[in-house]
Length: 219
Length: 261
Image 1 (cartoon, one colour):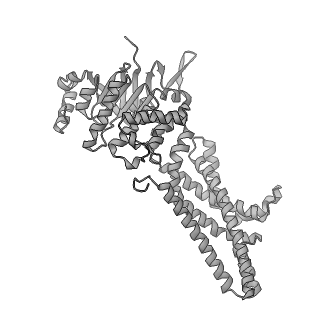
Image 2 (cartoon, each protein chain N blue to C red):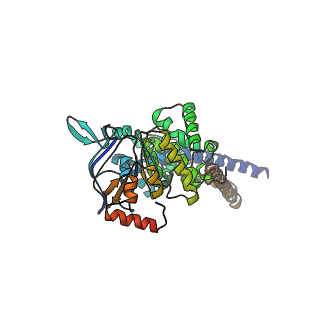
Image 3 (cartoon, chains in turn brown, cyan):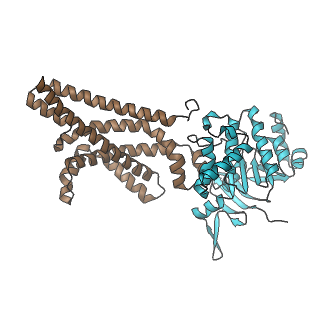
């Protein structure tokens, strides 16, 4: 039994790496999503073009390939990343591309009358976006952002391919060292699921807090 | 004779193949209360939206408060105005919408103070003091902390009026501001507008189907049909003795529909 607890420690170490990847990846993905999503609705052609190219490219190529490029190919261009940096970069750029479309859709979902009220009150484009449109759009984005974050959590397992000791990587280690398949794989299954539940719950809580007062019932 | 505060000169505007304004010209004097009436699609709302720069014009010129609205003069030539010019001109004009267009994520107070703080750099304390005066004027001082969703339609519209007034415009545009309200809530909004007309010298343009209110409120009534002004005059002339056949048939239909004139 003491032996198992040692192996469990290994798996928990892997869980920490997975959590780290998920958190850092999500933050960077969120930044990419807002940059690209708002670029997509920009009135400047060049910004729209850059945002569209980014989104289509990163949605259209596999995250494995993106990770391999970040880790194995970028060094040839003089940019060497640690496995963790490469992992965060690939995950964030990939998930950020999906989330950018969520940002765009949510911005467009805010009614025309809100934009007209901004004009009538003489708010500048950015002022209206910042104080009127985005706060309302954020509420529309949140549920799908939750999905995106869970997708990102699950996608972190690809970093085991560049020998980053995440949850999936450690499960393989434990399996090869003990010969037991059920225990390591059952534990990682439970841990991934628990992490996903925490994300769901967090996003739902945030959603409830932000929706407060909007429907006139919850204040 | 003072100069007109609004001079609309041969404005045309089409939505696709539909010509909604067809060489429209009109003038409004400072402090004048104007009612724009007519069947839907006649262009009365469109001219309000054009004055608020919510629609682009296809042709013609508009002068507001002595300056071109959509053009700037450079070296004797009229060029299309840029966003900065439009932003400066918008300071002169405020608008209240049929569907209120309040910001649902902000409380009443923040709805009223947002624009003065952002566009005029008014400090929060001063903006809130002014907002309380305005909310008091529209009878909603006790609702400052309420969210829009907690208000009735009439209350929402009164907040929207206070919000537009907070920027102290010279001209106020009211676009069917009671059309979306339950009948019993119409009067509270009209009362605010009567008060506004009595206590300020603001120029007010009002698109409305409330003929009784238009009659009492307006100095002059313009009857719109198919993108043109068919007839204009003092309320009594338009409502009691319309000369044009189209005005007569429009008013007959309105009365048949049960509206008080």
